[in-house]
Every structure is written in C-alpha cells, then in structure tokens.
Length: 269
Image 1 (cartoon, helix red, strand yellow):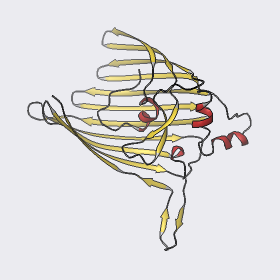
Image 2 (cartoon, one colour; image 1 turned 120 degrees about the horizontal axis):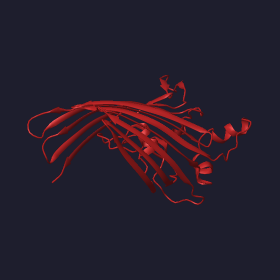
Image 3 (cartoon, helix red, strand yellow; image 1 turned 135 degrees about the horizontal axis):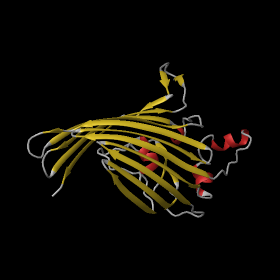
C-alpha cells in the first residue's frame, strides 16, 4: 500500500530502507469520493520482512540497513498496518502505521546484534534488553501533480528493537513536451537517512548516516525508445577521523563521497 511507482531508476534512501523490499501480504483497500475529494483507506496483514542490507544506489560498496525481501525465517513474525489517503485538486496526502514484532531470533540477534555498538548500548543502559522485539514504522507523504509539474515529499520513522531510524526526501520534476510523443523531464531529489541512536562506525557501513541528491534527465524519444541519465551525489558520515599518513598527507575518513552516474536506454515494442 505504501510503495510507489518512481520515475527514476534509483530509489530515495528511505524507499530503499523501508518499502523497496518485497513482501507477502493480504491487503484491503477502500475508495470513496466526496465531491472533489477522493478518500482512500487500507488495512494490511503481512509476513514481516527480515532486516537485511542493500545498496544505496548502483554501486555495491557500502551497504545500508533495510527491510529486505521476504524470506521465511525460523521464528517468523507478522506485521499489521493501516493507511489513509486524500486527493483533491492535484494535491495528495497519505499516512500509514505498521507494527509487529522482530523475527526471533534472526532480526535482533543477527541483523541488529552484529551492528557495531548495538549490544553495547544495552549493556550500559538500564531497562534496555538486547532481545527487545519492538518493531514499528510510520510515515507520511504529500504530493502535487498538475499539468507538467510534479512535487513530492515523504518522511518515515522506524523503531526496531531499540534502534530508531528516520529519514525524508523531497523531489520535483517538470515535463517538457516536444513534438509528437517525445518529451524530456528534468528531476531533482534530495534526502537523508539516519540511525538516531548509534554513533557511526568506520568499519560498519550499516551504521553510517547518509544523504543523497539525485539529478536526472528522463527522456522519451518516441513510442519505443526512452533514456534515463541520473547522477547520484551520496554523502556518508562514517565515524572515521582526519589523520596524516606516512607521507605527510592529510587523510579525511570522516566522510565518504560516493558519487555515481547511471545511463539507461530502454527499447520497447
């Protein structure tokens, strides 16, 4: 109910983290029109997706913590959710809440337990247990689509065990129509994803704070041929230090700039 059709090949950071992963679920959705207003409500029952890792963009060097594709695990748990949406005059808004329990014990012992600093936090914090099974996530998005203009913003916050994560993105695009079926659509998206409890550890990319700016040009050349050019500017806060190597050169390991370029040509017939 939450995943959306994106225009770009790349996902926003919170899309990768929270709604990209596939799941098995039963969903019910109701739509009602009240004059110009369109109301949508939905309920969902799903097999909880395991915590895993995925790539922030196309490069596979630095993995991030995500709700992974569904894969049955011992101790499998379930997730329940609800969503409510409203559309009118080109404006749209949607909110949702999902809750359940962590998979016992894959989520809390393997996925979270191996995160740098996760179990250490439980050892030094009164009332916190390393096998905490808490799981919920909620968020909302607003959008505007009118003519050639598109804009959308989204925010998500999650709690898994005692690890909070949160993030957002904002994107805008404008479609420029050319002759016949041809068009070009510039698009810009900015977003962040943060682990709000753990300090980033240089040796564990899943603990890093991340930002991502996507600049793209989506081109429809004719009925059969389209092209996407996307440039991802990734900033990652690693927890490293600024040091001097044996040659006397300054090495700054506090941040990683992992910029990437994608060119995709698609032919359909």
